[in-house]
Image (tube, rainbow, N blue to C red):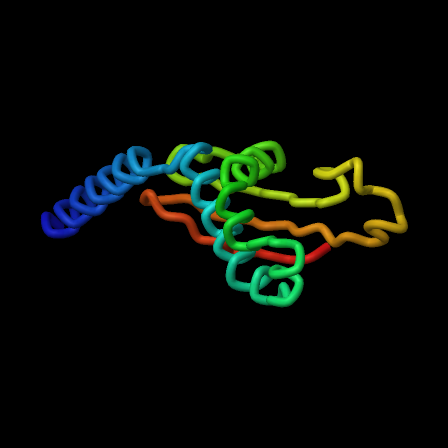
Length: 138
């Protein structure tokens, strides 16, 4: 019976220690915004900029990667405005809804942007790390 009591105490102590560590390493909103802006910039550079024809870049003297990298503060601001955080003390869930029509109201004319898709991301933050477990186009 004494072994069972010792195992119970060790288990309770281990769970309490894990809870304290998770509380201390729960990433905040600012860290998430940095993470999300970095991931979005990386996505734009590797997927969108590669689809920009070199001929077009030369004609209008437009460097897609340079523009995306210089827009990092604006990207972070857009993410901050479109993210909701649920803080569960030991971890957080971040829900980001990016919709270009709402972000760029001046271009909402149907002939310019007829049906710009929105994107929804859900990310778990714990142990100073982020895991995006849901990414869907709406």
